[in-house]
Image 1 (spheres, helix red, strand yellow):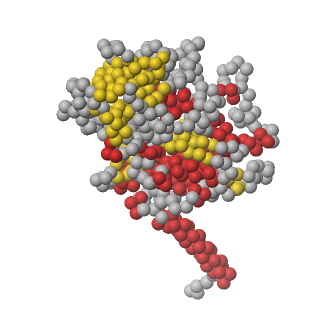
Image 2 (spheres, helix red, strand yellow; image 1 turned 120 degrees about the vertical axis):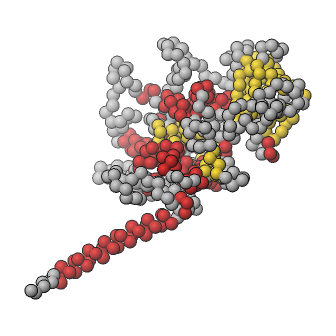
Image 3 (cartoon, helix red, strand yellow; image 1 turned 60 degrees about the vertical axis):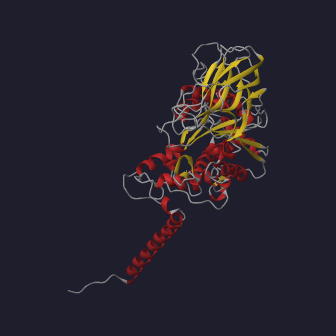
Length: 527
């Protein structure tokens, strides 16, 4: 039986199709291998969530790839080349404004689902939109950072710190605007310190404040309340700054959950966005049975072991990428809104929105409003929580340094020659120290001091003026392992407004199981 061969033009068409498929295949492979080969070997493990179809195939768009070392400026990360308007003559926008389109390189890197997980709360972003407009008009912008040792850069070089990348993004997005960044991070400090001492570390004329306190604050309601007062105080600063909460993770503590989880409710109450690194990374870390992911995302201790408290350079990079991605989304939305306003077709809630006349739903008058009650208040119809104007004297501040009136047996001491950790320190029971303090209308006086499980810390008795009997014992030792941090304690309440003297004496009695009596003072505050 004769075999019929395809006609020559059919054979040619088949060969041409095969060649095209090979070109497409190897073009994709080259692009994939370029991305893959740029990653450190221990970060190349597939971390994806799988495709939406349920397949186990490892797709580039579905995976979280560990970012490689960045050697170029952020315009490689966030494509700023313009996108022309559509047929309707829309605005010309940066390429990344086509969210998860070809120009959105951050979405290519992490995937749409993972970026969505990182935005724990977005909100209306009215304040950030206003600041972005201000920057676009060429007016100077000042960014303040409030955080702990992560934002201070523990374990990384300055050029690897997350806020360096974020600062660069602002400068590249607004090249004709002066962008200043003030890093007010203080290692081993909680929100109850910043609640009164934040202005010792950032400037009052900030336009944006990034708050990174989620792992410094323990999961206690009183710390969430301190965080709330910090937020309220920041919101009333002269420029009415936008607040962005950047929450990282630490896996060294007895629980994964930390203070940031309680503070999420506070952040939502004040409509301040929350970018959460743990939401994205932890599910992938938990899928790994080895320590490779720990070693990649966290820094190392001097002894070579993994430091599960502080993010590595890769961890800082993902922090920066996530807050940049959130900022890009808001900026793109605001650019579109500006264009719509120029055409007379825009309002803050979307085209056509009209608040009901009965007042059951809000209009734009609430967008930057600060609630009259705190989230920890009991509801009523009349109470207005007044703005607080705290006084802070701190060893960590050049503006209002803590200087004792008298000191017998106390010394100015720096921990391991680390200038970031100064203390007033005493070791001999009976040592006394006093401070002049100006008390405000609330009448509360507090002392900030170091607490630790392992440093052999003792206790002091502190009182106001001559009221020794009405004083309070403060203990430096606590039964919390792996947490050496500054903590505030109330010495006295209902103190009359005006000038007073705070006095403290080191006690023989101590909670330290080994009998340690050392005590370290950091700050004094009153409100």
